Length: 400
Image (cartoon, rainbow, N blue to C red):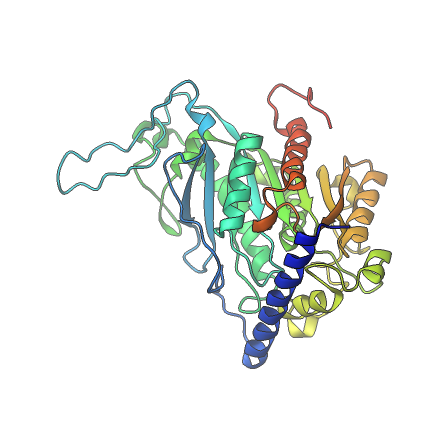
């Protein structure tokens, strides 16, 4: 069983979450149309500020990638990109009093060789209605993954429900995948190499430019998806879209995905949903309310494609799916449904191992107060060990 401290905090967190869901349900009573612009965080959310200089081994920056919505990204760049050099570059200029000096990391011009790292798209949890890509907990978790996996982490700030119901969050995630491909193409253009990453280009959406950190250090052919709780549902949707797109996504290649205690559901209850219907953090009633807030009113169904990945109509076929690591917690009512998905993937000859953590609860590796527990630290290490099989440039010498 979980420790006494975890039990006490889970009751407190559960109480706060239930109050938040009830407040959102009441506020949503008079809302009939989704907000196309939307929001990506809730008032009162503990937010970590971005820092483009290397702090504790990772530099971060925030960018807004869609002028028509609140979709935003936080990029986590590990210090390993500096190689043997320990100095941190700043952008040229700044000699004049009128110049604004950028104090963050600026990579060398694109013509010079830079260390390339795999790119991880990360989708935070929060039941589609809360959480943020820039929350203190998500920032700390993404920093950990960037350092441990030696990868550029792109945390996606997708639109939250009920202000922006399904499919808004899923569309945002696919938009980021396509944006990553656009960035790779911008970085590879000959005139970008000549002019340098600080010069701007124009496209059909207006002014745009190659994002310097990704242009210099990102390797989109080694792209991994990582989703937490409801973010795992989003990651699995993006993986399916990537498989169906095939070479149309080039040079982006989604080589693997990690689903951490996914927020899967279904009309037919599993053993864990029956046994732990009043479990820690999320119980059955709260999960149902989350889906009511997320799905359009006329589409509420726990066998909705966004909730249940094992519907017979779901595409593509499981045999075509990307390798999938499933992380589950023993004391999580959603445990059995995640394991069942992995079992079906393995039956289709997809690499889909399950990491189950004893006495762990939902969000055990990503919740702020649990981030430094032995299980959370071990989980991050286990994920990185498995990922190395697919992101290592030296082949498959790594195995789990």
